[in-house]
Length: 291
Image 1 (cartoon, helix red, strand yellow):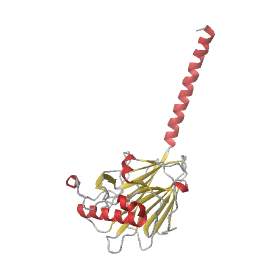
Image 2 (cartoon, rainbow, N blue to C red):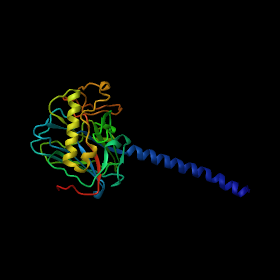
Image 3 (cartoon, rainbow, N blue to C red):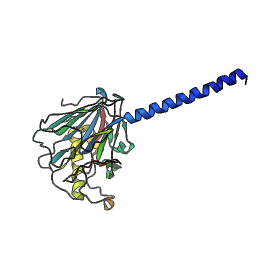
């Protein structure tokens, strides 16, 4: 190497080091300013990814038949159930870093992620309009089930969690049709993470076998009412019981789970979430047939 080239190379080293340091500091600064939004949907909610509407999400829970076990709705883990004489409707708006792209879906949800062009909402207890999340995942265990058609085994989660990266310090806004409802983030939120919790489950406490039977029957009813083209192929076998001897007994649990935190915020709950299964996660390019 010529002396001039060597001097140029040596001169470039401090500059490259400085640029790398600047990039690292900028990344650390971006991470420190990162704000996450989590929307937790626990129990019998169906989720529809509306590809024709910027991949926005419509979540809803149909009203059970009169002769079936009635459902109740809890918002943000509060001990008192909300009034469901009239349907509850929510609309969430949020400024996101990555807008309108199709969400990443956790592999653990694959057994119950479907594509459909024929769907309807019908008479629902709760409907929630949400922007496109960055990711859809779940927490906790998945229950073993079996499809009635073909006998294929599968695993079903008990919830869905929608994750968003918010833009700068912009906070989400939740609108509610019920003016008496305090539509603010959950007390379980903490710096850097804002949370909303929506929970649907039976009114009376059920034992494990009753809870499982109810969840299967309601999932099948949900498919028949809202996703008729999926019902024949994806109905669950109500007689399937493999692995039940290893299942844990139902217990009273916190309505929200906690991340590790120096100052954990806890919300007490006085009920048991008995609805053992979540609903389907469907993607579509069409509008619902009843709207």
